[in-house]
Length: 432
Picture (tube, rainbow, N blue to C red):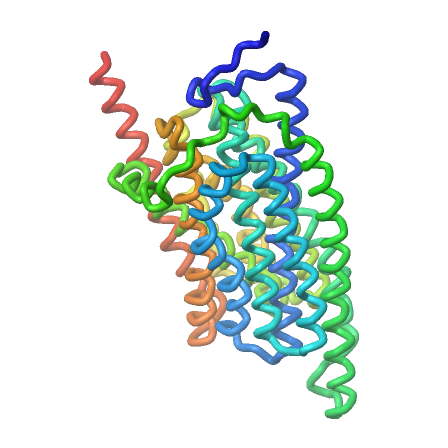
């Protein structure tokens, strides 16, 4: 009989073949939730145009999406403890499919609020998948390489965020180039809005179909994870005492800042690249270039997988955040190709931040990994808070000035990287 090891020993005690198969499924889940999340970046300019929204109002798309993380993350951790990682993944996929299908009645209603509701349900499913994947990929291998493995998983997430905006720009944004809604008569405008809303609902209906298929495949594999690897049920509020650990609490705060900053930049990127002072692109071409932002994150994460095996994670995090601040300052103060390329290059240095912050904050949690994952994923609500603040700054001033909001977030992240590095150095001196 094959030995089964406890989860906190860095393995779930299954054969290498099963580990490889499960890793493939987990990487697929990373790809899926990355794809769907990044579609918001092309959905925002579409809805902004259809409903004549201000930047602040358009950013409510991200608020509705990322608020789900704050509400559903801890319940997702409890769900995993009740039914296990794989079954919880199926629940998450089916919830995502349901949210995608809700775009159909939202289209029929023709109300911006209805789209926000559909996005919230969709994001609730994404939240469950996120809470499942991060601790699960950490369990599929030795603890000493968890940083690298989580980063590699997020590389697949970044692959999804790279492909989805490019395809989404073609499917969702293309028609905005051909028609200027402000030039249409009332009846023609109404017909145009209905037709354009159907473009959105048809896209998400296709996504729902794909999610149902993946849910079926994961359901077939649901018994591959040993029951002993599932976290034990606990009081949902018990996870809050993890905030007494400074490293965890500071990490959760930085995850809030990181997601908020990353989402804010991605959300405004299409409009920023359409400015005459940068690239002056039309909507579809600007939307396609969002893929370079996320593509940089993808490349950086695969590079980061190697670098994190050779250099201190905290030091790399501080260096990456510092470079991003410099790039934002360049994009905000200069014009033309330099400004446009600088803001796109932010994605490359964003690459290691989420997985590194997550892994640094979660070190030493052991059997409380799922609790910690659920709680720290609440911090992803930063994507609901920072983008509207950035949008408000853009409405009050300019898009370039608004970039200072995410720049401040990256400053906090750089400090966290230095904090964890000093913490590791202090611990090393004590042990010696």
